[in-house]
Length: 160
Image 1 (cartoon, rainbow, N blue to C red):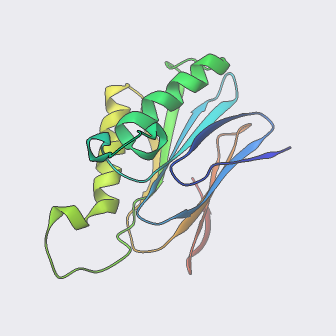
Image 2: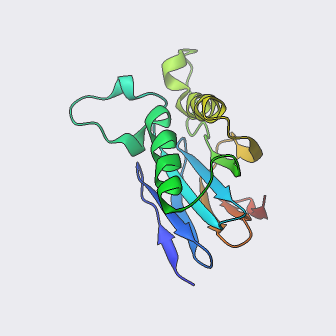
């Protein structure tokens, strides 16, 4: 078994028996897709909700609205079927308290909302979610079982 690492503003796929992992999810969202038949999984470490915020060369893995379609495309190319793919989300924390009520500063919740919307547009059901709060997370998906292991700072480990 190998561990495929996904960096910040990055995406990748893995096949059973490999695992796929990303670290340092704060306000970012880890989007995990899994096809239980082909045992192909994908992960995106989404930093921002919408690519309209992009300046310069576009990194499609950085934004929810571009990362999720690209991840689906990569999984299909590897043999996954979109009708069988399910999603799990983790992250999207509000890492800092602000006195302002400005929507701009709600990056974590906005990232979660944008990921949900992109998955809904792709007709991919979200089967489990561990989002919000104010703690960082590390996630690792088992490409054989689809089980997502979540290590949360000061809160321990759980599986969804």
